[in-house]
Amino acid sequence: MSVREEKVQVVEEIAGKLRDSKGTVFADYRGLNVAQVTQLRKLCREAGVDIKVYKNTMARRAAAEVGIEGLDTYLAGPTAIAFSTQDEVTAAKVLADFAKQNDALELKAGIVEGKVLDQNEIQTIASLPNREGLLSMLLSVLQAPMRNFALAVKAVSEQKEQQGA
Image (tube, rainbow, N blue to C red; front, side, top):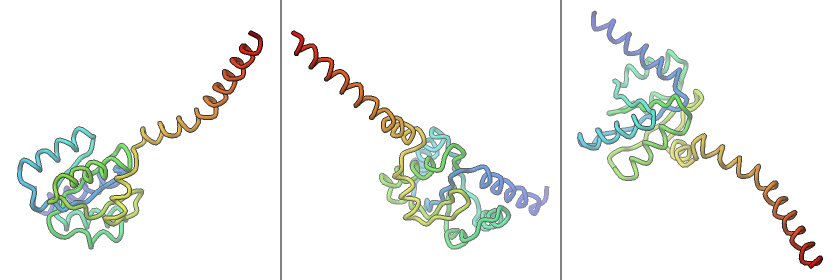
């Protein structure tokens, strides 16, 4: 296989991952040692996030192929790309949490629903709860009126019992 064919294959691989990914995060990993990179890969794998390092030119071509614009300014220097096919939050959350303990990892940008987000927007997304957390919050909000009604009925019945006794 020629070098050109290999490059085309890599661009297609990145483009496919960008299409399939619900949340993608770009990070500068310069300054991380081997143990830290291994730990980051392990955390990503456990969370179901695929993280890989590609050449920036390949990532630019793949983004153009998928129709994502505005990413070129963030693709400079060593860049690790984390893809999450589960939800929009997981990749950002894993990398942001890792970056809190390892100053060398710096979030650059991300892509959610085809929109390029800057570092601040990715940090905001990382602070959101994941899908299960949001569903849990929704469930507790939906249960609150029923719980309050049940408590009110119980209080009324106890009051009636006390009056009857």
